[in-house]
Image 1 (cartoon, helix red, strand yellow):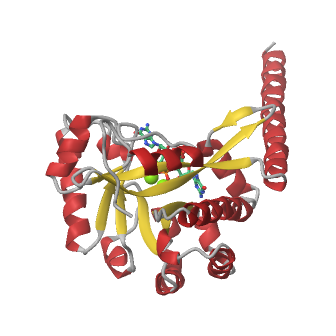
Image 2: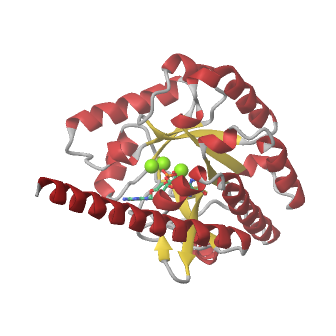
Length: 288
Ligand code: C2E
Ligand code: MG
Ligand code: MG
Ligand code: MG
């Protein structure tokens, strides 16, 4: 009987695993097809200086709507692309779209910096910098309008010297560099201090329970102090309420990103934001 149970259990486990594998195979196939046929798109979310009431930039976020599987979150397909060795192609597709949009906006006289997310895997690709340069040249985009959002996982301590050299080259080429989800990884302050960065982005996890959670108030205060002490600018992610934005401003972080200001939206919405302003109320945009 025990044997029988065991066997049943075993076969159940097997069926479950193969269902899981099958699901992943379907998704893998669909992702490859999407990359081959331009099936990914890009949404943009404003970064707003709430003190000056200006949209100071955008973050590009990859979107995937499969005809059969429906909408799939980047939290799912980015790790899948990394695992399948498709992240370079995905990153390139996003960058191409961003540069094309930037070129179009600049032809209408709108100059707006755009941040793109970069995976650790992409940084390991020896052609990363040269492909970036080729792409911005193709679309005649000023590198100063492209910010690369790196996570702390991009800053592998074992490859510290190599990473430092790459970041210096990127910076010398005119790109801006920020650390995304700051405070969730393991990068040491000694290492961080050596990197040619522009911005720290405070992870949404430290913002979520503001203003009530006193630990988070202390952490956010410390990160803002650290950023300013190192001569970096600071952006808060995941700002969902007026109270959060007000506290962050009071603490010295005036640039916020989050649903309270604007949700990520397609390029057509960016044109509206540039024309009509962004955020609750009738906020203004930089004169251009
Ligand atoms: P991230 O770079 O930290 O981006 C912020 C995420 O928070 C986005 O999720 C955004 O939609 C969401 N968000 C913004 N404001 C709020 C808010 O007020 N409340 C809440 N709850 N969420 C908010 P999304 O678009 O699902 O992207 C998730 C992650 O996937 C990104 O985190 C980034 O790490 C990764 N990702 C997205 N696009 C790309 C890409 O093109 N390349 C790479 N390598 N990674 C990407
Ligand atoms: Mg990001
Ligand atoms: Mg982030
Ligand atoms: Mg995040």
